[in-house]
Image 1 (cartoon, helix red, strand yellow):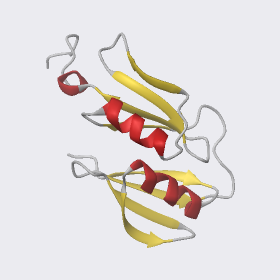
Image 2 (spheres, one colour):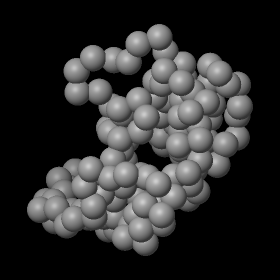
Image 3 (cartoon, helix red, strand yellow):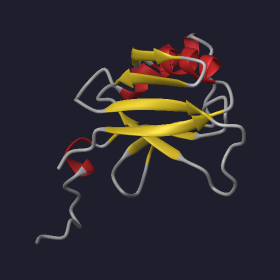
Image 4 (cartoon, one colour):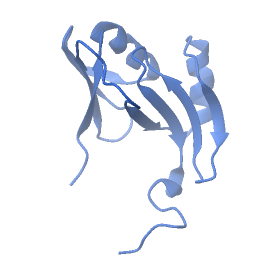
Length: 126
């Protein structure tokens, strides 16, 4: 089994589309204003956005995108006007993360974990 895609809600799909294009995703399906789908620049996963009338309540959604050159990515995105709530920082769980929110308040974590993403020292062997 492999993850095909994640779909997130948005109040304004067209504005969200521009935001995610700025992050570096490649638009592959454009059914705006109700739906769009992107390819991630690396790997085989896709990411889509669908129109909603109201955003979910509570803690919401957190989206993780990994990049081998996290610090450079963050610097380049800042130059494009993207604002971060946390700049790249090493975490106790061996990931380096930067945090931001999209225009709908969905949480985004840009990170680099390398081998520790799937094989941290505390991985359960089955």
